[in-house]
Image (cartoon, rainbow, N blue to C red; front, side, top):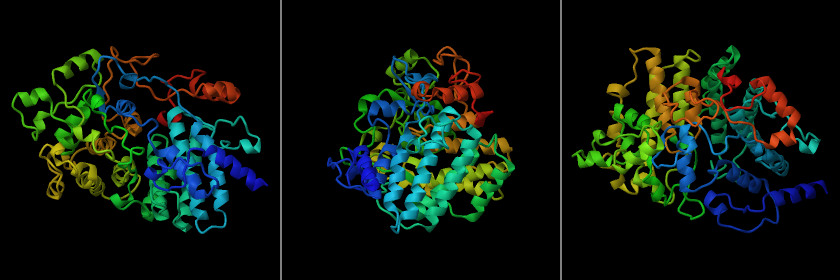
Length: 512
């Protein structure tokens, strides 16, 4: 009877799911399931977790503003570009998925893939927790998802303790994947337990570096031990990404977004960095500025590209765009339907994380090799990307070739072995920043808060920060639902962290 109850609950929660394992198939079968398997539960959980929250060109374009990868070039200012939001609140809603994750593990009990499903449960919980704590600060992690045990008002754990718990869960997930078998229902890695194991280790490195301001000697030693163990990503085949398709229900969010593309400029931070490195990704990301083409520049000339200053007023940006002053987003992003995959975590990012750690003395090794391997990998990724090779004309006569990759590390792109540590770190940070271009990720902003680089421009005259136009927001507010459903624990968390004020400029533990 207990199992039948669980099945009934799972069916209700999965009323829009299908029995298919691939992302595009998932979106085409409208049938309501009549039975529940761990594979079916996992597919729905991944769909809810990894796809873009609202896949349309307008919202996808907005998602590129916070990281300063792009600037919106219309007269109506978008708060995301000017350090605020239409809804400046975080969310704890992902923890509602923990109940279905428990069911997933229960239904997998006794199967060859049981250990792998246990790994998925812990990995996904840790991922939810990481996003939430980075957004808000203290969160209810240890008691989350325990409504069935009578805990309706979970306590808020200190952010330092949340990170410890997240790292513990990822370590346990890695161990489960290490002994697990390949499994179904996974459209991210195709059920490859070995790849999930690598990702679990790589994510530990990312999280440990995220708290670099607070990392203990023990945590730094753990970072070094993970690197030394070697169960990490080895090349682009291990990239963690959401792949879109030509299926109308699983297309890239910016597909058919020409009306948004013509008012979305590539930022001067991105354009200037790519020009500095003589990096041909510029021709993959952007269109030449019309006024420079009119002046006689060629589309394959780095000098034909000009980025938009994100801090300018909306009126000025729109007026300059009418005069063709800025490089807009490349036309290739509106076709084909499949577009570029959404990169969640790459081998390149892993390389840059380790390169920084070597420079900081956390681990021994050759930072130059990791830097170069990271750059080579992402260049190769774009060289081989189907969405790119499908329409060569969009590359403006400047394709990334293997010969180009082999000769990349000259001038400013060469690792500054003889320079200062700060110069080398800035090279690493900039290359890591460029990884997130047009991915809708918040990582670039978090890394800016941690490192201060690349410098994000802030003009008090255009800032929309309601509390202080001279500072960068550090967090989102807690969701208003917490004030009614968990008021005592909410207020205690706000009082202990932020002196009683739940504001976006308050500084969470990881940045202090």
